[in-house]
Length: 269
Image 1 (tube, rainbow, N blue to C red):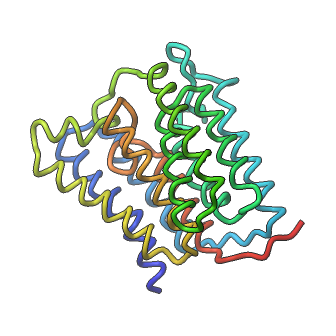
Image 2: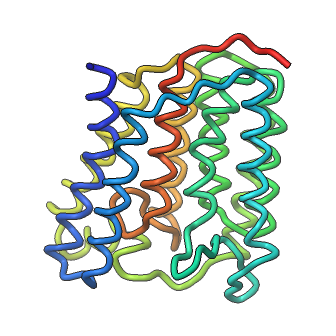
């Protein structure tokens, strides 16, 4: 029960704070409605679905998720040569925010293949280009190194840092209100509201890092990815995950939390 409460708070706290921000900030009605529907879908998955995968099946899922990261390069939409979004009928979801949280959970549970999984995600981020996904990969690698001392995470993090800088220089788009740079823009006009949103996001980070019912490498990698996405939104025009408008990170972290609940597995296959 305590584990499920931690999951509910980790996902629900920043999203609910973001819903208040969207409602009081007079965002288009579709924004809070979309986020609320995504939360209503993600929370039951995160708290009730236990995805049990052994080593071989985990790797198959990792390949499927990596393929999803590359799909926008073929399908579009393209804006100024940038392709980061999965077209799903009337919806377009940010591929990195949807896929990377679950990918880093799988990488944390597969010590042998963790570096290639993260580097493959980084390649997709570089081609899109998407500095936010690159920073999420970088911070996940740092989280894994902090958790298990795997020296291979050091060059992965270094490569991700350089790739993120390159992607940031090539892939910046104009910021959209209520989507990108939420904390930065809000701090200029309503600093206390910005502080409240930041506190909700920090609470989520701490709950994932320390209270999630999962082993330490999973907790630290997943928390690292959240930090990386959030850092990108502070320094450039990238989505403010969980607190700004966007269903992709809500669904992505819901799936990741469901995967995280499965507990340690014995590799096989």
